Image 1 (spheres, rainbow, N blue to C red):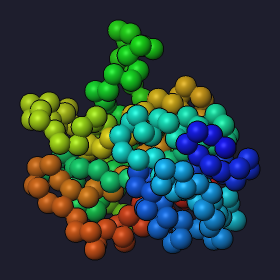
Image 2: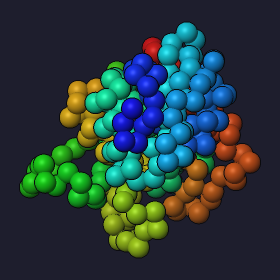
Image 3: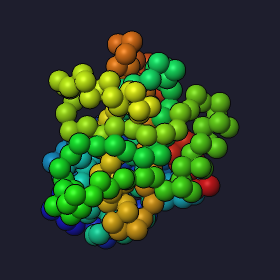
Image 4: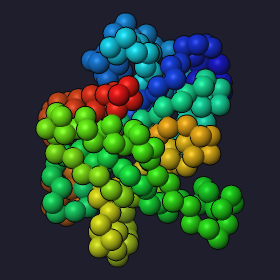
Length: 234
């Protein structure tokens, strides 16, 4: 047990899927895993462990934003021995050729957070995905005929942006989408020499202002979960 995770030793698998929403963790575990058991409920951040095609998997919520994700990922890696961590979450599209329900696989993550400034000082660290996971995820998406985009994303510290000029520059530099967690996940993976990837479903669009209705999200998010699982065990 740790400060934020109540699982006992051995109850967390080496492969962990990381949705932000704890109730999405519950839904994904009940939908895709066999014999899923709840292993954490501390502070309402649900975590479940079960099997997928005979492979042990934990699906654990991380909350919103990089500081929250950092707490859970640090503990999952350092205290529970997680080796493969895949974020499964939603994002906002920033390019016109990307549509609602499309899948974005983050090769790298731009960010504005100051979390790493004390470590890197004047250097601009470039967080990036594990190559084996990334290529496996692209293969899995193409096999499922899911519309997929691979490239740079933006991990923001704020949900309600008040910087249209920065958004325009990110778009001009071909950043695919915006979310709030992946840059820290990739940084921690590099620090502790584990594998990480972010597989994201486009739930809204910053340019067209479209948004995926809640009653239509489940199937789209299901594609994302299956892509992540196939990538983890390919």
